[in-house]
Image (tube, rainbow, N blue to C red):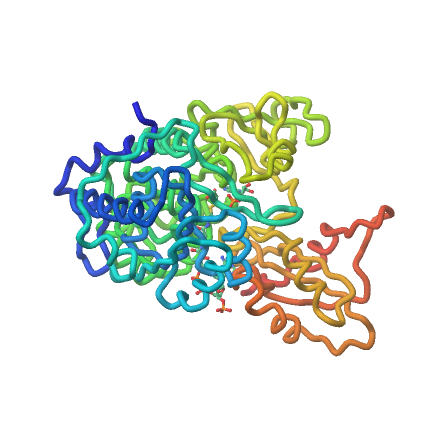
Length: 506
Ligand code: MCA
Ligand code: AMP
């Protein structure tokens, strides 16, 4: 039997009249209409020359049609490559050059800039998709047959390519197989008790694992439905929450909703589950949420490379500050970061993971892939943690130099390289500093040459357009020297301590 992820979720589409996605205006895309549309789009993709294994790169605004395009890619056996809408032209150029997609789909507004660049990189077709069901890809699908024979795929065939930045060098494409997607979706459906009665309030972006796989794939395997918001907006969340039973969010969703007077037992009474992930949910936020709503947020832990790894229990204690137990079929262990030797209960070390959820490697980077796996197949997450005597996993820090801002990963090296290239900058260090809204605020500490007339505004001005906005430092601070150890390594921990209270009141 084919292991194509679409074939696994196909039973949901048999309930043709059931709602799949409800738009904020109340209009509904049923499973039946979605099935037919994915067939038409898959036929259009095949007509454009997309063959199984080809990449389809997609940088579009959130819409139900973007989900249909993702599913059509699955059906056609193509590898879906979603791209954050905040990525700049230079960032896109790298991804497209590296992934060599057959087709690029962008917003109508960006066609004029993306098309010439993509063509120069050898892309066969550049198509558009708007937020109102418009765009050339939808035009190409019009008139195509609804029926499409979903391409047979094996468990190890690629379903998606998701770029993650690295601690060193360039972004890496995490290769995710059909088995990675289906194993995680089936497990999450069970452990979070998803059923066809559920309605997920979906306010996450759909170009990363959280909004695309965790939220959408779990909905699909359960035949549930989603209320789809273009983006997180507290007014819309409170208006639509009475229609929903589940919400998934990054910690910033929870801290922002907590600041809203409308958050109460009453306004959340229709909900059965709140899930948090992508960044640490402070134990304090967990407790405040419980006090205000009566709901214990269920925190889980994952990575682009591994999908979801652990989850707090549905029944049983959801421990504030812990990320719960390894998911069924997933093995988690704690090892000495240097030697790989296994560590006992409660000892802090590197979190390593193995299971059907773990990706098959980085796109065209066999050496980087090898470096991040142990010989016995465990993936080295780069997160530091421990497992307590009850089996709960706790993340206590990061072995990797990473800042997580509002659920988005920012790798300091990438920002430092851009800052160091600015005239008058001697060197820089980028750190994450506690931030009331984003969890961590990207912060640049810069050493300028004595004769340079550089200030915060000038640095930010020089970075504008070169990096996605969420990567831009919230503050740029100038120092005469960076603190270093005897080996000459910048002491980022010391910098983090110095600037700890910088965003306390933001
Ligand atoms: C927007 N801005 C940000 C962020 N988002 N800056 C830093 N960090 C961010 N996350 C910028 C905007 O460009 C804007 O800049 C300014 O901050 C204020 O924007 P605002 O309107 O407040 O932001 P927003 O549009 O409300 O977005 C905040 C958000 C959003 C809702 C938290 O970032 C979001 O939806 N995050 C979810 C990320 C996510 O899905 N991560 C999952 C990755 P200016 O004022 O200059 O214009 S998957 C993953 O991590 C793993 C696998 C896992 O475990 O899930
Ligand atoms: P990404 O590369 O976007 O997939 O981000 C993965 C990283 O997000 C992980 O390696 C963790 O550092 C972090 N992360 C995800 N979920 C949690 C969580 N619940 N608590 C703490 N960190 C998390």
